[in-house]
Picture 1 (cartoon, rainbow, N blue to C red):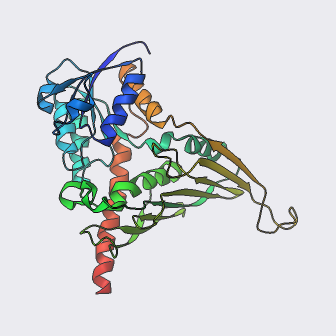
Picture 2 (picture 1 turned 45 degrees about the vertical axis):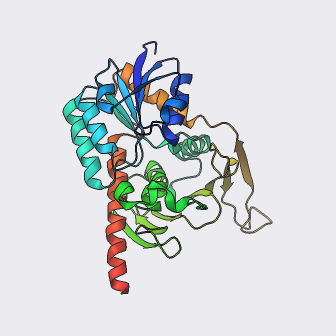
Picture 3 (picture 1 turned 135 degrees about the vertical axis):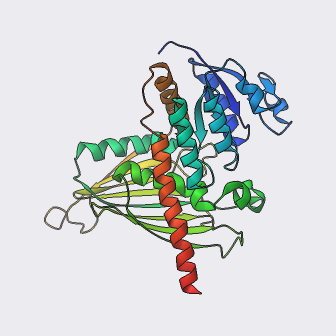
Length: 341
């Protein structure tokens, strides 16, 4: 892959800065400019041209844009960017609602541009290795998966736009749980049945601060997610239960390091005729200290553009399917709330 792609960044908050660093480290990408509503972005990005509007940025001779805006604004920007002939990499979630991703997907199909979403957890080293083990069939077929993903909140948590329903569209399930649901699909495929209970008993937002989701597919694989803003400790744990053992991903490489050291635990099923410690099989633990997930997903995005091949990982179809799950979960949660009145 030798072609040089000219790109822009729309939105320069936390994720915009991360994308800036990744773009600068990629020899196949050339950052042309940035747009953000915050004038302080000029101080953060003195090395790059700053535009007055995203429309002006789209008029430039660029190949692609990285959309790093809050959920409410990303659908319009994605759609307009593709209409202007730009490929799009958009952060998760794909808007505030199921209708948002449907509209984005329609624009993608009409424009024939490439569209990829930032489900970077697929590119984490522990997930990559776990996926390889599952596909090798070393431990048999998947019986079910279980995930816990949570935040500690913080003193300024209530001020975050992520907890403003008009801007975010949903609470902790849409903001963070969407990653775990995407991984459930990554390992098990589509789910057909969804049950969900939510609460906002601590933070008192008009959005959920806890969501408990149970899923099942036609293969009878069952998944359970607890997505929480009240764990008081940054937590990531994904368990894959298989016929002949299990895989556990604990910790998550992140900028802050607050989720703990990333590791993959693999245990093989052992009954009492194979082990002296009943219920405690021998485990193999692999630790990971280098997070290349941001770089790997952007490299994949660039490769698909240069080689003109379809986006096959973190595609608009992946985004649509995970938003369908979240839509069903929110609908079911409202039903459960009414039944509990």
